[in-house]
Length: 133
Image 1 (spheres, helix red, strand yellow):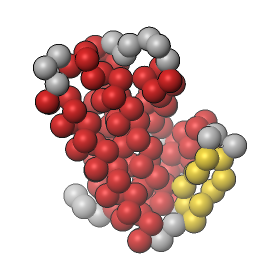
Image 2: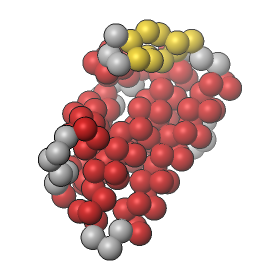
Image 3: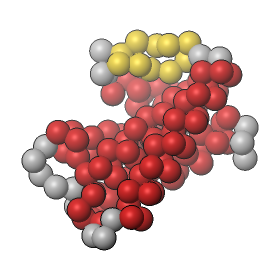
Image 4: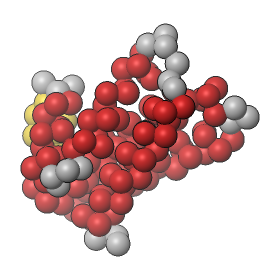
């Protein structure tokens, strides 16, 4: 279950820093790997965290609060209210979360591409919402 957490500029700025930090770490993991498939799950997991933080920034900027907790569908619904159309990118990342972080099944090359694209879109919108573009 999720709860709504109010946020001000300080919280929004901190979540933006975390979104960028996770995204940067994902890029480093991907770029340094001899074989991208060998780190696909770690890459996707970092993208998921970056996407969640970026979504929080968007919701904070546009709604004054973000979702916190395990109810990811509520975070998707909240993002839909803050930035219609962008929720599909968060949903795509969240759909990969369990497989990449908790399953024995390896991530596919297609999932790696989808995760990378989703986090780029969410980060771009978060930067815009936060006034960085």
